[in-house]
Length: 341
Image (tube, rainbow, N blue to C red; front, top):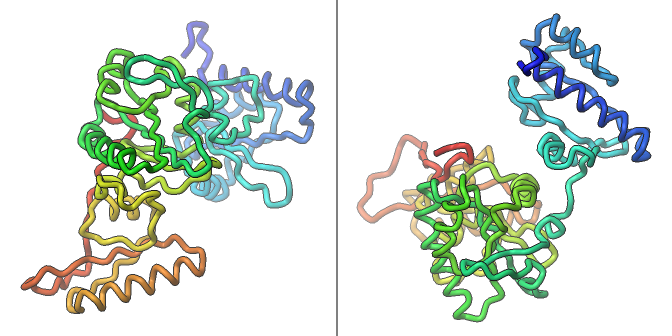
């Protein structure tokens, strides 16, 4: 509770209600509405207090099934406090599930529509010698820009950073238009400075917490390390850059477009696919290598034709191996939760 005894949820909702009224009155968005979806463990007494300060509608506590479905749809756990912004029109497409983050960064910015990623990225960058440059100066018509979300306290990050340096150096030696920008999740300026001292690319300044937060939010970063590759227009090429470059330090696969079919022996690539939900495993140990490749190519073509991104992992067969009969392959993702240590 706050010093005056006010429940923090009530204090937050009171502030949100004030901003809601301001948005409708001053920002010319009278069509902007809010609906509260309570958690199943919200006590009736607290709900009554909350409704006294909220000028918007509330889904009744009795509608538990509907509330659970909405939380599932937008990835909100029962204990989360999250603002989900839906766009106009009949389709009501989700514009962001991180309006609460935007609220913390810019309370007056309701209804907090996300900005284009290049707009967020534009601004000063610093290299390891503290010389200032700009993100815009790094872009060219054919450039690929990698945003490297990493931290010195993250063990998988420290293992991947040397690999990324090798790939970056190889790309530069081959004259490829490849740039990297470090977006830190370090916990202090000292850690940030020490970590980036080995990096040959610039970084978003540590003090620019708003821009770092917006980049994380805008690209949906939830684990470290994450390497997101963007084209010159700010379109995402892939967010599986860690897996792609970890196995290609010679930069032969530039610009590393995402693949629908990966080999399960590549743990990083397979883990990246598994982290996205449903994955199909094609067990072909008893087939010859050329037959396996033919099937994988056909699947890749099928997914590309139909615009699918359903991943298929193709486990290899080593000479002399006995056929695997379990039909299950376990892959551990080499990433760390941003909140981890």
